[in-house]
Structure formats: C-alpha cells, structure tokens
Image 1 (cartoon, rainbow, N blue to C red):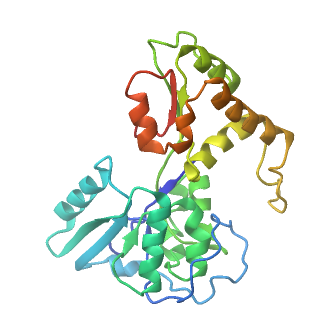
Image 2: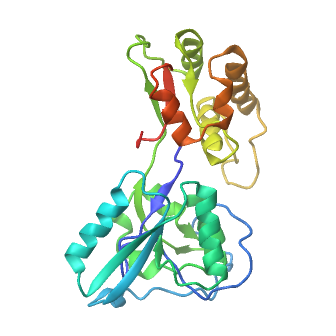
Image 3: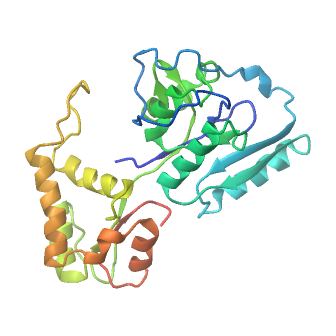
Length: 290
C-alpha cells in the first residue's frame, strides 16, 4: 500500500512537485480523491498549461513548499539546486506542519487568497483531482509528454486526472514491518502470525490515530485478506466485505488482547517511532524514514 508519492516536478523553475497556478478558481477546496486516470470529464477545462520553454535561462527566486523536513532531504535538495543554478536562479524552502491534513489546509488557504507563497509544492497523491479541479495547478502534460517512459506507470497515474498530467513523481513510499531481533526469532509471513507473536513477545505499534495513517495501516491488512475498496472498473464501492471485516477484527482484537497497546489509537508516525525506540515492542509498522 502506498501512502504517498511525493509528487515532484522538474519544470520551469525547480525540481518540485506540482507547479502552483495562482489566481485560479476562488471557491473552496471540496471534493478530494486521487488521480482519476486518463478519462476526461471536463472538470479542468480552462486550467493554465505549462510552457516548458520557460525553463531556458530562467532567473529569479522560486519557493518550494512541503511538509516538515524531518529527514533533511529537502534542505539538501535546495542546497544542491542553488549550487547548480545560482546566483541567477535560486530556490528557498518553506516547511509546513508534519501533518498531511495541515499541509493541505496551508496550501488551500494560500490558493484561496491567490497567494504566490508556493511556486512548487509537494503533494499527497489524494489531492490531485481536488487541486486540479480548482485550477490551482498547471497542466504539466506538455512537459511530461516525452518523459512518461522514464517513470513507473502507477506514480504517473496518481498525478493524472481528466486526461491531463498535473505533476511529476519524485519518489514513492512503502509501508514496512520492522521487527526486534532480540524478541522475534521466527519471522512471520502473515498478519495473523504478526499479531500472535506480538501478543507473546511485547506487542506491535503502528499508526492508529484517526487520520490517513490508520487508513493505510487498515488497507494493508484488508488487501492482504483479499479485500478491495472498489470493484475492477472503479464504479462501485466493495469495501463492505467479509475480507474488510476480517482485517478490522484482527486489529480490534489485537488491542483487546494486548497485541497492541491501547495507546496506539493515539499514535501517528512520530509516536510509533518513539515507542519503538524504547525497545519494548516486538514489531512496528512505519515508513522507510524510520
């Protein structure tokens, strides 16, 4: 299950994510939903289209916005960019809060105010359709036309909506199951085995708070059980299934029987990692940064 593909864009100004088109529709950010594939609905008619030739001999300063740079990668990227293209073309970093919801709110507030604070920004994959429909993004199709084969197909799909490409994938993320080698001698191959061992050997911590992290964690178990969110052609919800119930039951039973601490229902990524670093727990579900 992919939580987020940090959608970065090497376009007119900077290796970023999406290029923000300021001065778009002034209405609120409703909707949501990820990249809608290649089918056309007309929802983005009138959106600004990027001109790749503007990258030639570009000058000035560009602002790149993203969530909290906990790894230092963004600072390094800005530093390297400025070394390569400065002093005529320079970039600066603006960091939003770590929470994806707060990042979304920060960007929406700026776009509604027609602010130029963010020229390029890092986006969660589920915001593509919403932001493109509001005409807050440049249509990047002309830039990506000859570059699509350089990328994995699935990440490109996440930035595709209404038959247009709105960003460029920079990296993909993946959920990982960490185990404590002092406690776990037999590596489990199913989630049932994970929870069974966790009950006896110290527990499992994960992202159990009511936010997108819990959604990802649940979907991993549900997909492993054979469940799906939508049917094959994406026209009908199928999440209300025996497989989904089975996955949810495993998680709730895990808290009841001590496989996971009750406090896990308040954990996001940092809390999960902090708990794991105590050495008390047998397993942790988290992202590669951990």
